[in-house]
Image (cartoon, rainbow, N blue to C red; front, side, top):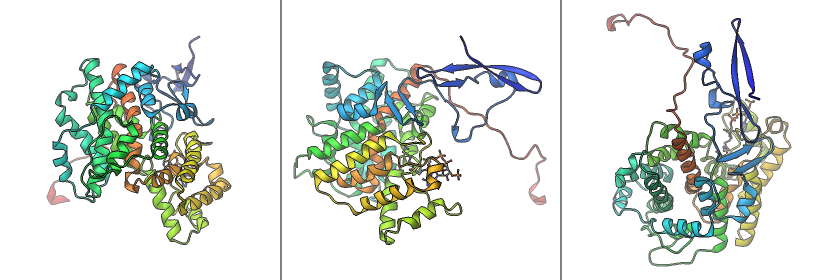
Length: 428
Ligand code: CMC
């Protein structure tokens, strides 16, 4: 039976249909609300607003469940490769052996970027943050592939854009790093795995063809899987809303990269390490920083703690914490900030302030520690997140286009001045 809710307002009753998802989550469908009642809803930060129906990722924050297309994140992180997971997210099913071989090969042969990208890179100062560079280089891809600007092309042509994008993002990311350290760029090498190729472009010099350490590439592959999608978060919503104006895939994702950069979202991984370093330099007094985080007159927040949706634990953080232990052990790295991180976690988890607000370590609390152990510089951490999140952004953009979503255009409750007469300059 169709479920309905009732809204009683100013002596009238309005029926509101209830939509139920496959995991039995219910939502009020208010798409006719204003038409019927003259009311809109107000929900700052969209804390209670579903912006779309989506079949990509399921997340239950209370129980700490995360699934891509029905498969648990724990199983995917253990058994899949990042490319398999990207295929799953974008096309809806795990690839067969033949499909994966073709997909891998298609990506492999598109990893090179146009030589003119180098002259764009040359224009950036070396201090340029790699996230800003990456976002603009992704937008610049529209200049090299002008036909991709039209999102109404055939499925085959859109697919070409998707493959090109997956193939080229690691190249652009590694080159933005090379620009940062003023080293010559390294060209992609076909035949390496997705993560090996990225690490090769990051750390090999044109003159030394060092082999990529498999411990490092496996750990990185797992991290990319954990970051691959997270339903309607800030950057995915950005991608969908930008794309809803029929902006191209490259333009929409470029905006998503900018959204990810902020320290409350993906930029938290860089902010966590900077915070841990600050605590270390300040004598390692964890309780001082816990007190700062609880002090409402202090803007300091414990970076890597809390999540809009997870109020119990972040399943990605559980996997990452274990991976961090393994990687540090296998690489024989001892990182003093890890001790501070563990101390901070222990104190916060037993503190009433954090317990009552459901604040737990999130995915970014430990990811920076692994990235450091893998030799990735701090300001590249959020770029790593972006590489991992690309399949999710693509899947969200594709689903939004294929389901013919209307342009995203929220309303507001206006609180400014009511109509008033213009004041001439001499009277101001
Ligand atoms: N440290 C101290 N207090 C916090 C923190 C924190 N990290 N996070 C939330 N709070 C407090 C907040 O002050 C508020 O307290 P009160 O109820 O007394 O006003 C309460 O907890 C609820 O916080 P909120 O800001 O209303 O929650 P939100 O859902 O709007 O924000 C968040 C979620 C992730 C932005 C926030 O927890 C935060 O700023 N965390 C630190 C940044 C971070 O680690 N971000 C990465 C998120 S995971 C990666 C990703 O997927 O993006």
